[in-house]
Amino acid sequence: MPSPAIPYVSGMVTRPNTVSALREKRGEIAGQIDALQDQLRQAMIDLEHVDATLVMFDPDIVLEQIKPKPLPPRAHAFKGQVTRGILETLRKEGTMDGRALTIRLMAQRDLNPNDKALAKAMQKRIGAALRDLRNRGLVVSRSGAGALLEWSIAS
Image (cartoon, rainbow, N blue to C red; front, side):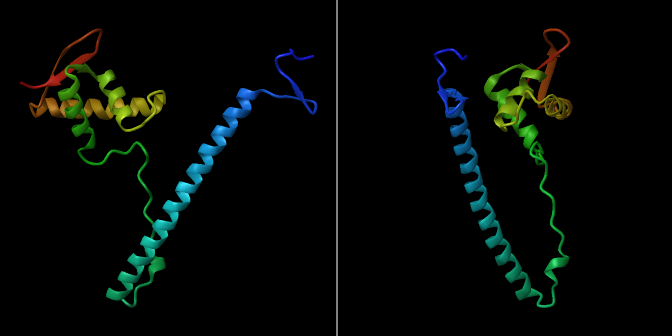
C-alpha cells in the first residue's frame, strides 16, 4: 500500500510534481513545434520567391537539379567567430585559462559544456585560435595553475 501522501486514482498512483512537470514539458515541445512550423512556412515562401526570380532570369532552368545544401552543425563557427569571442571575453573578463575560456564561449553560444565530445572539440578549436592570436601578437600566455596556460590581451 502506498504512503498516505500519494493518493490512488483509478488504481494508479499519482505524483502531482511529475504530472505538472510533464504538462509543462509538453507545452514547451508544442510551442517549439509551432515555432518550427512558422519557420518552415516562411522558408517555403522564401524558396518560392527565389525560384520565381531564377525563372525570370533563366526561363529554361530546371529547379530540381539544384541540390539542397546541408546546414552546418550546431557547434559550427563561422570564420572569425571564435577569434572574436576570445578577444571580447578576454577584454571583458581579463586573464583566463583555456578551460574557463572554453566554458564561457560555449555558454555564449548556448552549447552544452557537459557534452564531453563537444567540449573537447571546442577546447581544441579555441586552443588553436589562441596560439594563432599569440603568434600575431594579440594575446600573451604565461604559466598558470597546474599545466594550464593563462591568456590575456597583449599590452
